[in-house]
Image (cartoon, rainbow, N blue to C red; front, side):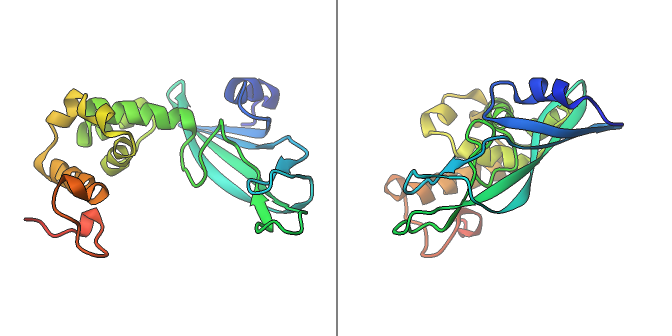
Length: 199
């Protein structure tokens, strides 16, 4: 079933960048929103010169906050522009959508904030169960990674982080030490937290 694009344009992207909805397909349990940027040009992140020469485009798939119990997925067309500055080290660059999402992210910024709060309140397994009930199911490690990206004081001030299961607490403790070796023993060379030997 096709829905009215102008309605979804106001509902989903009101105040977010220069976005436009091309199509919306609503099926049982899922709403797929196809969108692209409306800006005619974009500024190079290295030299700040504006360019309107499009090199190519690619698709990004972003999970968004659910609507009326249905999961929302944004299929975003991202254009790559050619930088025309001769001495600029960057030949092409992707148009930015700073208010909608971060580079390489699989979630919109607003959903990311919700996941951070769920992770802070409930941590891993309990948080994952809640997200499934709320309509944007994610895994426990996604929630833990979201919280670990926050500054340490925000994590330590939260009740949930005093009630972690032993395996989760051990992994997060190793991540803290890996990021801040001065707080404890130094991580072995080339080791990542999930491969750091216990003990």
